[in-house]
Image (cartoon, rainbow, N blue to C red; front, top):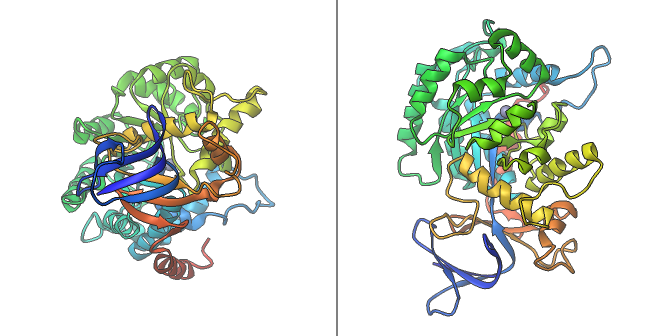
Length: 455
Ligand SMILES: [Zn+2]
């Protein structure tokens, strides 16, 4: 199969009238001139490497927009939001999870995100009762991903404690999973994922407050040499204080000192880091997982991204709670948070790059792909042909050429310019619409009706 793009963003820059040849699995075998004989499909517009979404709790999509009313009697915070989220988690059925996730994955694909890291912790039935198949909820996510045609890196989460030296709360009973039980779930998912080239399986210790040192060691040894290993690092100042109290160290510092944080690792929400943590995290081979819209929505704080990037740190993006599902909004908010804090402009650029939109997209695509162990993020031989095509006729892109089109896309309100999306060379979004949008939306509507009133 051969696709010929009018404009294609390669690691070396934009190429015009560029062909990619694919094998039967949608992997890129050749990039070059379209002149050779054979059938081909021509694609107009601006084609880019698709964006990985490295951090998702799919079920939380059902809560989006339901937690923006202030409580007149109390001050809202991450922790009050978490109580609402737990109420949803207590009620969700396997069917609900599958329907909600499929809808979410359609939205991701329509936003140009073709692979998702699913940080999944609702493992059990209500009250913590075990499903006959311990991996039932995980398998629902695999099914949702297959329906939508998105690549999935499944990250089953170990959640052992309710906090440092705290027993789990009753409302956490659906999450509570020992390392050995979790590794069994992981193994079961791996068996089911055999023969599905879009699925990867990693592991996720939830956080240092939920997984203590000996459990973390057991999980990491079960993750193998490939990983990936994801952990919530330092989202809230309260958990940093707790960690100092119980472990004598800030969470990112503790991980760097005790957990052999290497290229397998992704530290999600490393929001609260001091200068030495920042330098050492940047010097490690780990990726930082940033979720700017969720971090803003929950009032977490601002990650020092400019300093981190200047120290050669690497990051990818995720939509986490799914209050928004937009790669451009994540990147825009990331840059704008830095501008507001620094009172300067055009801050998040890799060395030598002048276009902030292009630099942000390329950086997050490349390193986000590494974080979830998916062979995407750059249009390159050996990678999978996950490609996003922007509509060159979209009003917000008119007048723009190669030098500025990604700035217009990321900063210029052109979120809806995503016209076509290919996963493994197969078109899943056409003219801005996912090909299964209506059927999946209907199942989501029924799930929301079933859950009605609880949110
Ligand atoms: Zn999270």
